[in-house]
Image (tube, rainbow, N blue to C red; front, side, top):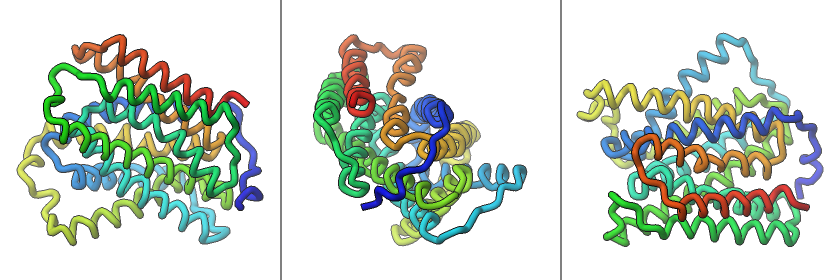
Length: 308
C-alpha cells in the first residue's frame, strides 16, 4: 500500500547507535519512574515528564535554529497521531505497568513490541514476513513469558489480579509502542521532518491529549499535590524526563529515520539488557532464569529482523 514511500536512504550506523543509546537511557529512566511512580499517578507523571521534555526540546530548537520543513501537512499529522498513540496512551500504560510489575518485567514485556511492529508493518506497509520472522516472533514471546511468570522476591506475586493487571498494561504499552513506531516510520518516509522536530510534534500532541484527559477526569490540580512538595520527587522526575523522554524520544526518532523500522524497533527494545546490571547494582538478585529469558527474547528479535 505504502511501498512507494519506503525507499529512502539510511545512514550507516547512525540509526543503530541512536537506538542503543535510547534503550540504555530508557532503562535508567524506567528504574527512576518505578521509584517516583509509587508517589505520583501514572497519568499525571506522564504529563509532567512530557512538559519537562517539551521545554528542553524547545530550548534545543532555539539554540540550534533548526526550522520545521513544511512540504506537506501529512507528516505533521502522522507524527502528532504517533505521539497520541505511543506517548499519551502508551507511556501511561507503561508507567502503570511499572507500578504493578517493576521496571525489569515491564521492559521484558516490551520485547513483544518488535514482533507486533512487524505484524503492523505487514498490514499497513505490505511488508511480508518469512518463516524466520515467524520463528522470531515465537521465540520472543517464549522468552518474555519465561521471565514474566517467574516469582521474584519482594514483589506482590501472591495477588494474581495485580500481576495480570500489570501484564495487561505492559502488553497495551507494547502494542501502542509498535503502532507509534509504524506511524512515525511512515511520517519520515513521506516528508523531510527532522528527528528533533518529530520528537517535539509527538510530545506536544501527546501532552495536549493528556491535559484534556486530566481535565475531563477532574484531576486539574496536577502540580499542587503534596508529592510535589518533595524536592527529591521533583528532581528525580525531572532527571528521568531529561534522559528518558527528552533524549530518549529524540534518539528514538533519529533511529526510526536513519535505519529500517524493524532494526530500530529491535535495538530500542534491548533495554532489559541494561536493566539487569542496574538491578544487580541496586542489590536485586537476578536469577539465571531471568538471564535465560532475556537471551531467548533477544535471539528471537534478532531472528525476526536479521535473518533473511
